[in-house]
Image (tube, rainbow, N blue to C red; front, side, top):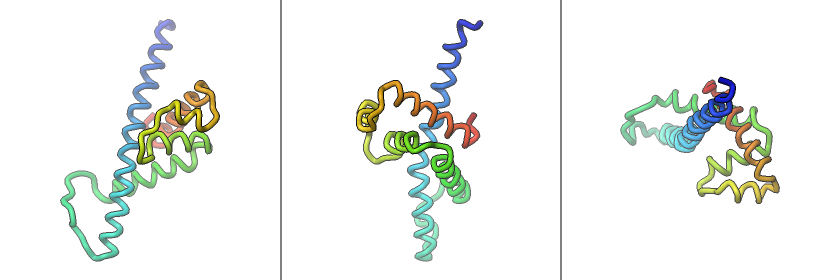
Length: 126
């Protein structure tokens, strides 16, 4: 049973990373949706586009909670990794990031993993 523990741990890590990355990518769109809704309210426009899914309150809460997780649970290196890797408008390779940041490959992947798990914990995913 113990011989399977590292494999089990890897599977858990992979699943956590998958869920967190999905939420971070949705966060980019949600952040814009919240800004758009506020702009519509300021201009007195409502229902500009049909809403098929989450309520405005759910969107706002997700945005606030993800922003809080990014701001308060990550150190500056972890935050930079997450922001550049998942929240930017351009696709960035890991190797580019760790070379630009002056980190070794091992340091980079350890920080990235720690950041993913910190976010997952803060959001109640794990």
